[in-house]
Image 1: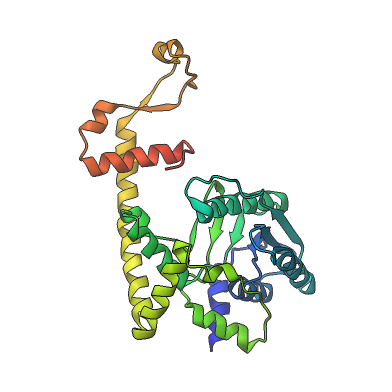
Image 2: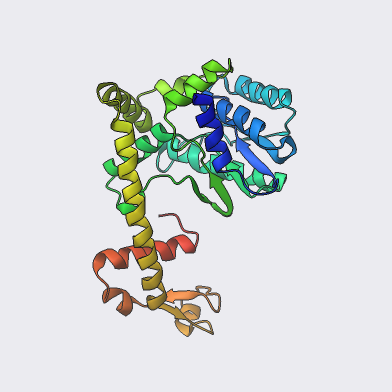
Length: 296
């Protein structure tokens, strides 16, 4: 029964035709199940296996070799990228640094493979961790909507990120791996409580032991936040359009300040923003910054 759930999740996200697909593979149990299930459902020539070597663990070279061998055993092409050395000072911490560069590496490999679809093995437990972390950081509806099963790829909006396991629990994935005698690697850093996500993961695991149905209830709540986030985004688009100014020529004040401004780029009217309720003005400003490729 459980294998049917796994394959059904893959088939639900299967695109029409056989476009190239980049499948992110860390070597962990989640990505191993994703890889073996996808290889059963999608034609082999369409799947490119991609591994990001973070260089943060002594076993990283072994994990790279393991993923390459796994892809080779399935007859699938394999790509990999190594992240640069960890800098001495990092804004936002190691987790944020690794996540940002990991997506950059995946986008680079997707371009090399000619793939506009990227698969990752995020599951419902990951979703709940992301929601909890963002709630602790004071996120609004857009942040509390957490991850989507289909969304533009962070830093590469021309690529579509698919998460077919987002509705499945970690335990279901693990049981599938065990039933099919799959092999995987374990990252010891996942037990390091210096990292916020690991602390949240441990707390959630204890909560779910006491309340096994809590995961599904929380996932349902996240879906409600996603509906609120969609409504907020639609309103932000309307507000942004109402507050935008299109200048056909570079503004003289920008030239005097020595600042370049591309003709035709939308600027924001502070007066128009000020007439909006504070919450809506904030969302319009965030959307404007995001559309301009700026980090929040």
